Image (tube, rainbow, N blue to C red; front, side, top):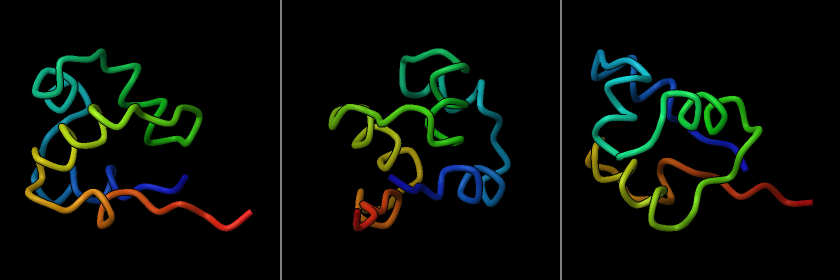
Length: 65
């Protein structure tokens, strides 16, 4: 699953730590999602999307396999 978290963080000028705090997870979790080593739960994906004011489909892209 691809994501646009790093780009959106840069636009809003927030760190991984800032985003983690807003979503109630660790910075390492945000890093793992950004580097596509971890797929977030639906709830976490919704929280991340809400922080950026975006639709989940705008933040996360399910790749064809």
